[in-house]
Structure formats: structure tokens, C-alpha cells
Length: 161
Image (cartoon, rainbow, N blue to C red; front, side, top):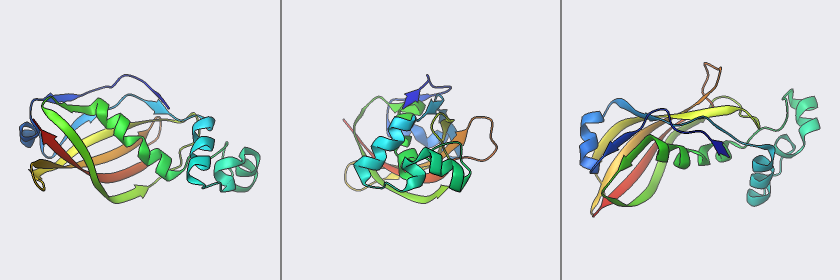
């Protein structure tokens, strides 16, 4: 995956400092793109070798695409790297992916298509044990398109020193 520098990031000392940002956008990543080798490698890794992900001529002929379709889960997996561009918590010692809610793959991503993450903060709450629970609104927007590639709510647990 190729990624440009972020557009906007938020830096705080502690997770509790994010409370004042609930309900707002906290960052925009740089533009990213996946290459055909990324899609083919993901197909091999996950054993999801459907022709729409592995056979460019067939994807063109039968699906009307300009090449391979990136797997939805591959596109989703880019969120972690892109979110790291959107915000930082200086005293965080550990992050745990707690889960995802309302995931929607709303538009195709093809190799070479550019997309970026718009990250909003939906909630900050005490998590289990010594953690803070963040609910993050994730929207992967595509360059030159009104329709996002993906939307989801991502729940992250943050532990601090």
C-alpha cells in the first residue's frame, strides 16, 4: 500500500483529553492506494481466490471493472495504518482492536484507486479494566467520488502508563 502524508491529525496527551472532541472529525489521513500485487497477495493469504480478485481479464469482461476488485476485508485492514496518521495519544502504552460495528462496503476499490480515511470520534468511555474505550467513525473516501468505499464504527481500547 502506498500512503501520502496526512492532511490533518490530532495529538493529545491522554485518552481522556479526547472527550472535548466527541462528535467531531479528529483526523484525515493521506491518500493511499493498493496495487494489484496487494490484492493478489491478500487473495493468497486468505485463500479468497474468487476470479473478481485474481483474474483481471475476467473481471473486465464479466463484471465490467477496469481490473481486479480489492477485497472488502483488505480495504478494511488499511484503516489501522491510516488511523495512525489521524490521531496520537502520547501516554498510550497499548492499543487493542475491540471490534467493529456497522461495516458497509459501499463502493468498489480497484488497484490504483486513491482513498483516505476521515476519522471521527463518536464516544469516549471507560473500558474494561484500566482502559479507555474509543468509538471511532471510519469513512474511507475515494478521490473524485461522492460515494465512500467503506464506512464502519471501530472500537479501540487504549491503555496508558
